[in-house]
Length: 332
Image (cartoon, rainbow, N blue to C red; front, side, top):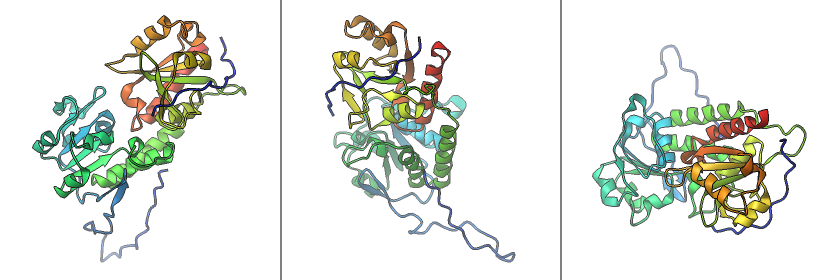
């Protein structure tokens, strides 16, 4: 069955490029070959991160605690996987070269647990990792020589504009700078941009794009991707129209009736150990408000692993996964 033209979303209830600039240096004379210079204070100007100034490390971090999967994946993508002394609050499996895995702390680590690891850097996917009952104040950690980094896309203590690829790839580069591997950060951002540019978005054949719902969690009411975060960026880049794109928040709670009224052509299901994609399908089939939707009856589902649902190094892969999943429907 071909996709229909999108219809507008009824009201929902809201609850809550990288520019690689190369500075040309004077050519070295034959008598004076180029040599690696020691970083100066100017070279290590503070990077503003979630309202906090972070001074980049002069050398690569050697003992890193990563809190959440997006943080751990970022550390690995920057080539610092061997520096992981521990992870915490992982949302899914983590792949390291050689198959070795660092220890994992259950739940959010306390300040005592963090300091016991003697890290020189703590990288987190959410600001809550630095709450008083968790790792503690970032400035205090900086005073102890511990560099901190929080994904800017997850900042809630400061006003954050709707997520863009320039902002997301820029934060990957900034993370590399802060952790003492600026070249790796720049290369990661460039590789991600190239991979994104290589993806061919869905083509509706001249019609308006097919509509999609990003269903993350929730049984009493579905928690879905809104119009300003990673789900919106992924769906838009894939060539789909998010039925909740008029909600000016990264995430929103939608009633089952509103979900049914939006009648999405495709439903993206986030797969997590604590709320699997399969359980979401069962919920959609069991609920009278959604059981008769074409997307449910015809199983127009695309499954995305939970770590890809949050902004990070998996976001480009999420676009490719959604595009491939939708293209496989009706030979599209």
